[in-house]
Image (cartoon, rainbow, N blue to C red):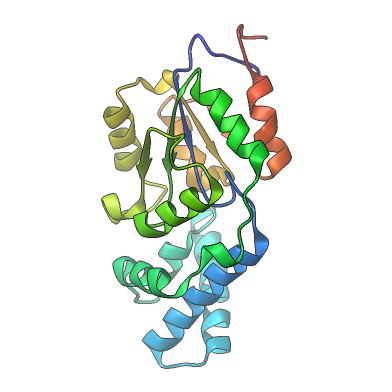
Length: 217
C-alpha cells in the first residue's frame, strides 16, 4: 500500500482475528473446534472430520480460485453457520491463549485521535466482545460488526455496503485492514476503499507511519 493521506481517510475498519492479534495456538483451537462440530454432525471421528475439512477447503479453493473461510467449509459439509458459532461460544476459551499487547492498544489509541475505528469480523459477537475486552481494545473502537449481524460471512458485498452506510462514510474515506486479501479486502477494494494487508504484528504497527499528511507518488 502506498502512503495515504489522512485528509482523505476518516475511518479505519479492522478485521480482528489474525489482524489485531496473531495467535497460532488460538487459530488451531478454532480449527479443532470446527472439526469437533463436523465430527458430531457427520458421526465420524475427529481425525476424519479434520481430513474431510482439509479436502473440502482444497477443493473449494481450486474451484473458486480464492481462499475459503471456515464458515464456508462447514456450510459445504452440511453444517449451519449459526449452529457452528453457538458451538464456538460454548467451547472456545480465547482467554487461555491470547496475550494483551500494549503496543497494539497504544497504536489504536493514537489512531483513534485521528480516525473513527471499527472492527468487522467473521467471528460472532459474544467471542468478539470477550476477545476485544481481554486485549484492551473494546473501548477504543466506535463500533463492531460481526457475522451474527446478518449470518453472511465475509466476503460479502452487501455487508461491506452496510458497514459503510452505518459509519456514514464514502468508500474512499474508509481504510480496510485485514490479514486475508480474498476474505477481508477484495470486496472493499472493488468498491473503491483503500486497503492494507497486515499479516503480522510488525505490519500492523507500520500502518501508522503509512498514514501520512500527504499522498506520495
